[in-house]
Length: 452
Image (cartoon, rainbow, N blue to C red; front, side):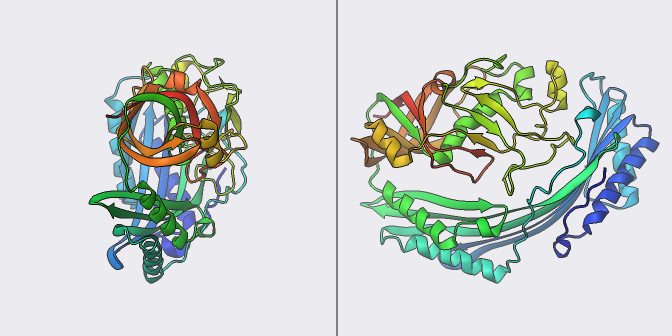
């Protein structure tokens, strides 16, 4: 069924209803060209970003984008092409290119459109579109306010990498030859600030940001700057640690990365390529029993909310991990067929993942840990997806008697994700909801810490 897209007409080159018409033209051209199946996505987007540094405007970026992506199937052969030109002749040329590619590719029996029985039919408004009528001048003032608040925290905050204020709005329609056509509008706005502190000739930097679908849900610019300044100030005087083994607490903004490693390991591409340390993990105990993860794709204003995935498959709330046991994978149609399974409506990635947590905030977690490492920044990409071996550069704070004793830097933390997931002793209630994985600070019982 065809769905209308919520308008924000003055922001875009095309009226919202035009996108569905263009998608229909693409499908018609592909059928006429001999495609046995076809799918198309038609989109347009608007963005504005302003960066202020040391009170002066450093950059003003403004963009309007539009595009068509078409995938055709000739039997079991697949071809894809794209264009930013919406003229009828350009549409026909793009479809012809996709058909030519398909005719020169090998048969792949797992390719094709999503199962028609899984497609979305009726869905509620996901409440994802909240335009921000912010002028460039107003954005500049917000940036200045944000940066001034950061620099005003302490005289030792000596320099700035700048404060940015951005807004983004988009509309799209996805359609395929199985009769599906639907789309919606969305928005994403943010404020970011990073500053530099100096003490005794040594410098440190840190940052903070806010991101939301609606400008009403953003943290005030002044508070973003203040948090960036405070975080930088706390890192002054950082020192190295001696090599040891100890408990480690991941602060909530980076604890979400631990959940991201799990998502990658149980996603279709990693599984059918056998490049995952969690092969055949459905029904197995991967986490400790007090950890559960639920996918909630219909959260109002959620950063990863969607009524259907990139193939039109209807999304549904579900338990991904229950009491530490894996309940399901993240699959699109292709990976599901490769594995002999059914799509989980995750073509395009995971939706909002809600990680269970306890009643303790971060200070209470540190008291529970008593002595160990609080990690607030990770460096490098030292994670082996096949074995789960984990080694990352890190910075943060050393904790003694349940209190932060001093900042630390130039250390490495190491372990194995399989053991780390089974050694999660607590998850805090300081949930970071700025991304697609909602998670509080995570405490791991023991990890190796390499320093001096």
